[in-house]
Amino acid sequence: MFPKNSTERVLIGEPFKCKDAFTLYDSKLGGLPLWFTEVPKEYPFHCAQCGEEMPLMLQVYDPTDTLDRVLYVFACKKTKCQLSASAWRCIRQQKEVEEEEEEKPQPPKPSASSSLSWDFGGNSTSSLFGGSLSGNADIMNLLAKMEKKEMKEEAPKTAAKEVKIPRGIPVRDRNHPMFPEMFIDVFEEPEKPKEKKPSKAQVEMSIKGADGAEGTEGEGYEEDKKMSRLLKFNTTIRRHPSQVLRIAYPNGEPLSPVTAQQTPVPACSCGCTRGFELQILPTLLSFVGDDDLSIESLKDAREWSSVLVYTCNNNCSNNSAVEFVSVLPPL
Image 1 (cartoon, rainbow, N blue to C red):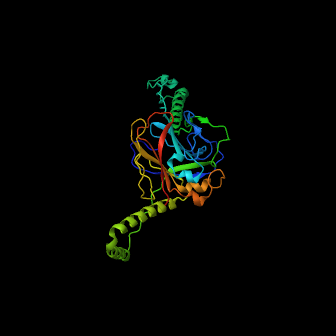
Image 2 (image 1 turned 180 degrees about the horizontal axis):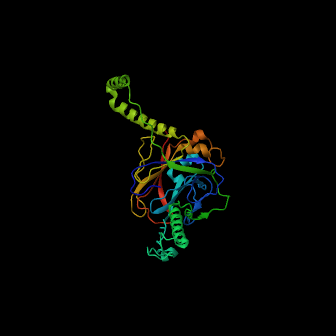
Image 3 (image 1 turned 90 degrees about the vertical axis):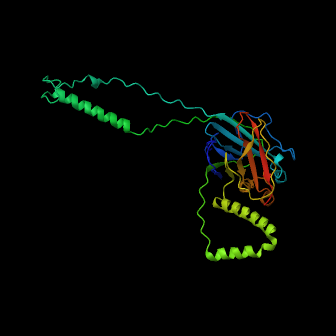
């Protein structure tokens, strides 16, 4: 979604219902996958915890400046399994962006008006100011043509080129388990509103509180850090409560609500390091909780605070690259 050399920006995704046909250039929650380059040999994927088939949780279109890329995230429908990364699978498929051929400028065609004479001699048929009607008519015709040409050149080009969207490879067997299908609107996260400066009284209270906590400085600091992280998470999500995913590729960091130590991110099979790309938020569960195939209960479902996807920094050309998924513990 961002150029490879872009500064950190964040995209967020919110589900919405739409009757339009889904394409590879869209993102969605649930349904069946629309494969970009191939159907992976291992598909359908099964949960390593319980052995059941994992339905598609998310399909996310996230291109770079040179690649069309699609991420497919599958998850077990059982909440107990979802706490383990082995109950999740992320597949990356991609193709190089086809460069559009630039239109070559056409050589100017000789105009019929170029044969007109601009001689100021006495010939009535070619004189600019002569009395002959034919001479004046030629000039008027020429000016009219020039004016029409200028208007044509200045007119905006309304016929835009149609974007060619790959058809993809649909999965037509509806016997596969599915989460409810919804489109996801992906857009850049608006800037947060400016915070008000604390009042003098608030500053004084903060200083007094710090002075009174000297005896438990280490414990108090860790607790404050934990609460600060959780507050930032909740405040950010509250600005757009319907967001179910966050993309901060290629230079971003996840909005982590917990300070728990994460599993080290392994290198890609090509040897390159992986970077954070996609964060799945627990708000997503409220959109799949009504499906009896998906979640036993929303209360039990909120046992993971976020699911993080890390992808190859080199975007290796493997047709169906398996990327790394990390599950963060409960809040």
